[in-house]
Length: 373
Image (cartoon, rainbow, N blue to C red; front, side, top):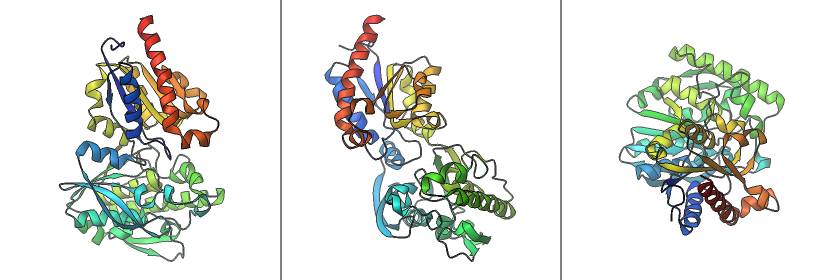
């Protein structure tokens, strides 16, 4: 019997980075809840970060295409994107994301986005003229120059570093813009930050990619110079562009050079999945992610879902690996995996097992809620 007034329980998670993906989360939780008599509807989601291309491909029924590319350090490997008719869904992290590097390989002066450009070129060669680009999880802060150079941008640069933004002198956009004049680009972004300044790509995200304090200052200065160079060549001021700091500034550069449309990855996936159409009939929504913190409420899935549920007066639960105390009150209930485990590494390695345990705690909470109404 459904104890939530015969309403659906919506499962709307993001992936747990390095652990559960959104599909597995939905599969496990749906199985456990339905065994106890509840009815669930699964909406695996992404925000533009790791795994989002697979999410979008799922809803668009796109097929994987595997090809050779390079990682952020220029090493060859195979990666996949997705193709449906003339639409390609391409994920930066799949080619040159931080996930492909060991911690000791982080090298902000020699990582770039060239591998992403390789995948884009391959998709166009297969007839794609509508690109949906997912850009979270990057390993570099190069203003997108690595990818754009592969795609046809001519640059003047005298630096020995593979991160071309460290000494960018000039550009010629003619070949790039001619090649992409009939290509429509939508970029799914997982952050709102501008390209430079105290909230910019270097200041906020370069530290997690291995940058020292001195390198952060240098990169921010170079991103400001890159913004000036783009304005000189396109007439577009991108310094305060929303989402412009995603993936080391590639979003701002593609907006300026290729008229790319920058949108929230979370909002795009929620709309694509038809989550909104089911929300008003929901008894409870269960979202999840590896960690929730204040950043989760600036474009990430759990924060976006929580805000929607609050707006429509629908209870929302979160299942997370870790959580900061200040965000706990934004959810009706938060189930923290690390509280059930021996260590954080244990929770990452054995997440499916602990999710099954948490599902029983969720069932208890749902029963209690039903009988207290």
